[in-house]
Length: 340
Ligand SMILES: Nc1ncnc2c1ncn2[C@@H]1O[C@H](COP(=O)(O)OP(=O)(O)O)[C@@H](O)[C@H]1O
Ligand SMILES: [Mg+2]
View 1 (tube, rainbow, N blue to C red):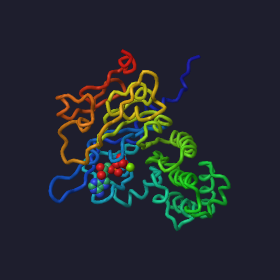
View 2 (cartoon, rainbow, N blue to C red):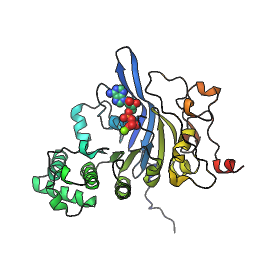
View 3 (tube, rainbow, N blue to C red):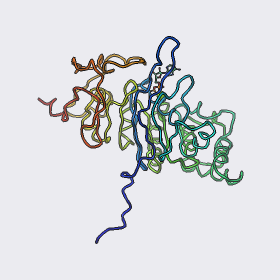
View 4 (cartoon, rainbow, N blue to C red):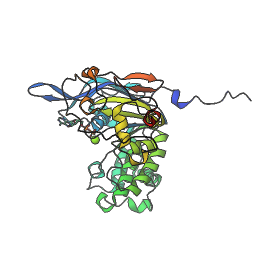
C-alpha cells in the first residue's frame, strides 16, 4: 500500500535552535579579550537531544547561558548567531528576552539551590512563571503548576505546591527545577549538568524523565560525563577549550571516537571498557582561556601529537553527520587496531 500520508521526518526539518560561529569573551584591561567559546556551531532539531560534553572549564555553561541571553557581565557575545525558529536571539533587547526565557526556551540549572528562589514556595515559583507567560488567572495557574509537578513524577503534587525548596530532597528539588523549565512548554530545553549533584539512583530516574521530556521538544543536554550523554542523547558534540572537537550520532561516537580527546573521555567511563579497548587516561589539564589560539589546544595532552599540531585544526566533516577537528584522528576501527 502506497503510504503518502507519512508526516515528514521531523529530523529533516529546519533546526529549532541553531548556533553559528558563536564566540564569547571576557575583556581584559591589558590586552585582547579572553575567548572562552571560540567559533561554535550547533543545531538542535525538534524531538532531538544533543549532548554537549566536555571537562569542567571547557565553555559549556557559557554557551548555554548565551543561548538564554544570560552571559554574566563582563562576559559578552563577541560574534555569532543564535537562532530559535529562525529568529536571531543575540540582538534581542532585555525586554524581548524576558518573553523568550522560560517560554520558548527553558533551562534546568546545575544547582537547584541557585535555580530556585529559596523564599518562594514551589507553587509561587511555578505560578509566577505561568502567569508571566500565559494569560491565565491564579486558579488556572495553580492547576497548570500542579500538572507540571505530576508530569515530572512528584507524588502528592497538590501538597508540594506549598513546600519551600529547602524542605525538599535533592532529587525532588531537581524535579521541581525541571517542572519549572517545562511548565510553559518551551520549544527548546537546555539542561546544564542536571544530574551532577545527585546520587546514582536518583540520577538514573532524572535521566529517564529528561529523556522523555526533552524528546517532546528539542533538548541540549550538558554534561562532563560521556556516560550520561550516552544514556539519553541522539547526537553528541564534544567541546574542548571552547571549541567543538568532534560531533556525530551518539552510537557512532561511542563505537569509534575519532578525536583523541573523545577517546580519552570514553576511556574514563568504566562501563565502556569493552573487549579490546585500551584505557587511555587523559594526562594533564586543559589550558586556561586564551585570546588567540595557535596550536591545537589538546596538543600538550595528546599521545598522537605531531609537528602539524602546531597549527589548530578546523572541524571538518569526515562522514555524513560526523565531524572531527584533528590532524591525526584515531583510526575508524580502534578495536581491531588494538587487537594487533
Ligand atoms: N568572569 C570570568 N572571567 C574570565 N573567565 C571566566 C569568567 N567566568 C568564567 N570564565 C572562564 O570561562 C571558561 C568556561 O567556563 P564555563 O562555561 O563555566 O565552563 P564549563 O561549564 O564547561 O565548566 C572557563 O575557563 C572559565 O574560567
Ligand atoms: Mg558548567
